[in-house]
Amino acid sequence: MKIFVTGGAGYIGSHTVLQLLREGHEVVVLDNLSNSSEESLNRVKELSGKEARLYVGDILDAPLLDRICSENSFDCCIHFAGLKAVGESVEKPWEYYNNNITGTLNLLKALRDHNMKNFIFSSSATVYGDPAVIPITEDCPKGVCTNPYGWTKSMIEQILMDMAHADSEWNIVILRYFNPIGADPSGRIGEDPKGIPNNLMPYVTQVAVGKLSRLGVFGDDYDTPDGTGVRDYIHVSDLADGHIKALKKIKEKAGLCVYNLGTGNGVSVLDLVKSFEKANDIKIPYDIKPRRAGDIATCYADASKAKEELGWEAKYDIVDMCRDSWNWQSHNPQGYGR
Ligand code: NAD
Ligand code: UFG
Image (cartoon, rainbow, N blue to C red; front, side, top):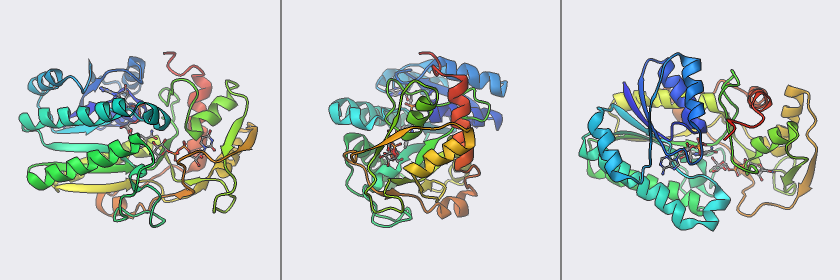
């Protein structure tokens, strides 16, 4: 298939492009490189022996989207492009709503104008808010998001549902990711956050590599087995595979489908630190800090729907994730060197 991948130079995008190329798909990427580097795609080429075509440009640029859709006949669009820093979204709500929502509306218009109505969207477990049930099934009602980033995901989901309802030619798969970590086992591509990381695993790897001195554990008084926050960490290569499997639903012309992509296992902050130390034989010094605003105690998936309907399930465990995160960080202490 010929696949249009927005945000394909980013963390999850580059791992997905790698798998798409390995599966024999033709890939066209659009990325403005605002949070990534062309180097990720150079390395994808090195790993796969195949090249994705890259348009450096913006989903806010409607004429460019129209041109790309005129120049290519896509079988599906996988839409990763977006801003994703939770804290920054609180500081810059307009920028987040504009980039993520206006950008997605522009993209959907260009695809619709060119009658290319197969679409896979990167959503997030954040749409469940403080989840009503654990483990979280796709039927769990969407909740109150605690930040503008989360609302952009929730609102885009609603837009997609309304569009699919109004026009049955759309085939849309909404993938709700839990907590992606890890890196391609080669250590050649991985997560390259700008500045001090907000997320747990990149913070841990930067402590391990000596760029940061100690981890702060945000709260040890949650109602969880050890008091620290519990999440469903998923290896980015498993997540990438979830997109390949989602193409099956697109081919079946199944209308709109929603899937959780998680392992189904809840792992606490201290569990993750211990797994990292064990997998890599490195000590991670940490201090218990106050709770972080907006955090919830527990979030993990019931991933059985994706298994039943897509034939997808996570293969990597937390030790693999810790090993591959460190393999990437230790071989690329400055990331891609942007
Ligand atoms: P990322 O920042 O590494 O990748 C996003 C890519 O989109 C970047 O390469 C960036 O340059 C590009 N981009 C941003 N705005 C753009 C625009 N206006 N035009 C063109 N390109 C643009 O992030 P990621 O972790 O790979 O996330 C990919 C998608 O998955 C995002 O939509 C994110 O919200 C979603 N998601 C991520 C997580 C996570 O924890 N990483 C969890 C749930 C959902
Ligand atoms: N944590 C720490 N110290 C840190 C960073 C995080 O203790 O330095 C804790 C948090 O309090 C939380 C857990 O580690 O309990 C995970 O935090 P992350 O920031 O790594 O991930 P979140 O679950 O908060 O959020 C992430 C993404 C969201 C996405 C969500 C679900 O940042 O965008 O996963 O997919 F919506």
